[in-house]
Amino acid sequence: MTTARGGRGRQTGKAGKGGKARDAGPVARLPEVRLPALRPYGGGELEPEEDYDGLDFSDADFAGQSGKGAYFGDCGLYRCALDETLLGRARMVDCVLDGVRGVGTDLSEASLRGVEVRDARFGGVQLHGAVLERVLVKGGKIDYLNARKAVLKDVTFDGCVLSEADFGGARLERVVFRDCVLRRVDFTGTQMTDVDLRTVAELDIARGVERLSGAIVTPSQLLDLAPAFAAAIGLRVEAPPAD
Image (cartoon, rainbow, N blue to C red; front, side):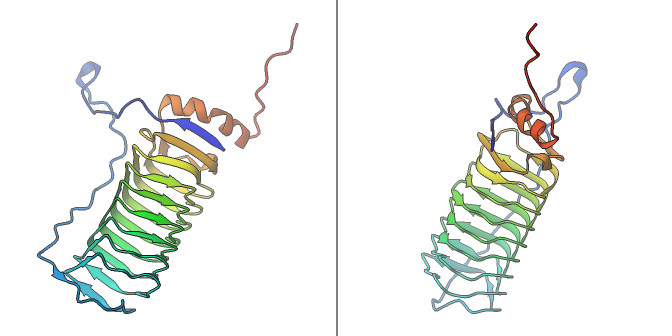
């Protein structure tokens, strides 16, 4: 396990010597969700393979229900309960999930595009094999995230806590962790391209430190990670022998 301190501030992109802008680092495209006037959801259980368009799901309890393969377009899910809800291979496009909560929510092989997730609380959520593109996860807490072999492209985690997240075998491209806490994260076999970890408040890597190629960290984070990097390549670091 390796813990690194967060950076002391974000890169601002202001001009430095010679008038050149400093590199602001990777930038993930944010979702631009503009929901239309939504129709209230009529109630009832979710239906597999159903199409849900322009609906307002407020305070709905979908615990134990199945919406496998369902399509959600231009929908708002507010304060919904998703405990053990089956949403494998579901598609969510231009949706807002605000204040949702769930334990054991199954989103395996789901597709999320142009989605905002705000102040969510999940435990044991299954996202293995899922595809996330232009997704913002802001605030909230996710415990035991299973994102093995998932594809994350243009994804921003902002001010959230990820505890024991598993990104094993996942592909991360233009992923930004901004002011987040990452506890015992697993990067085993992860492929990274333009992954920004500089403003992570707590970077605690349980496994896969050697897979950080393609990520960007601060100098202080690099110093904290140095022992793990040395161990990963079999480098022994010892004090010189006494005279």
